[in-house]
Length: 284
Image 1 (cartoon, rainbow, N blue to C red):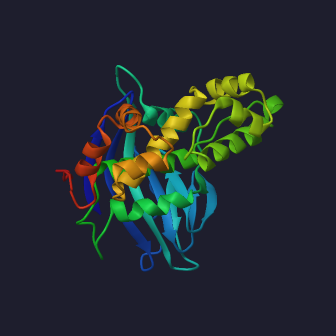
Image 2: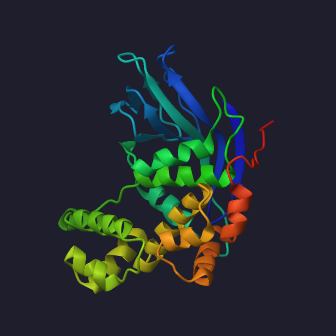
Image 3: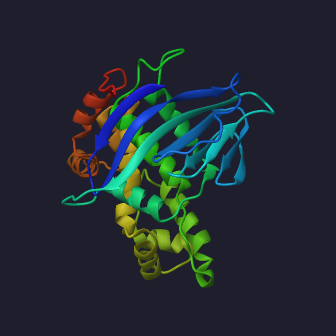
């Protein structure tokens, strides 16, 4: 295990404690255990089973799964002996803050309702070279911000929303809305266009965003744009190309949006968190 500690202050605080790769090719189980923190994992290859609170889940490449605090769990790969995953242990807590940021929306939604195991987005693979590099070890851990974004992405993949039975159809509509936003982030989007594509009124779309996520449509669009912007900056793309990629042609507007989301300018972010420019702390 590679000790790794960092702290992100906001209305919701994440304290990341350890992270790294684990292979279940020789030792085929980590034995039933429980702990007081969260542990989120991403399956990089192979297959296995996950036992969590008396329920057994099959694991396949690309899956994301969580160990909740206080719940007995176990990971095994007895059948195939080839399961490999990347794990992060963390604690979540609330602190006083002057304002909430985009990460607070992700964490609050995760707190309200999340599944134990779910299929991860294809984009999660792109984080692996940024958070851990080097054969046989993790001496080249990428910057803290890369790991933070990776964790937030995994939490968002596990997040679910509880719907009353009488509005069950909303799930399909909102899933379509989120997919539509992701497909069209590289150009200007309006509430009216998204609502029309989903077959609902603009007023209904705005109301459902407030009810289900506590955010506005514009905030969700900007959050997703800035998340992808940060990801591409970490991959080394020039700031101007990143701005164009997320559909913002005005450099000043892009900088303002990025600062609101991440607290630093795009250039500062890229120079500070560029892979290979490490900023790690070892736990005592």
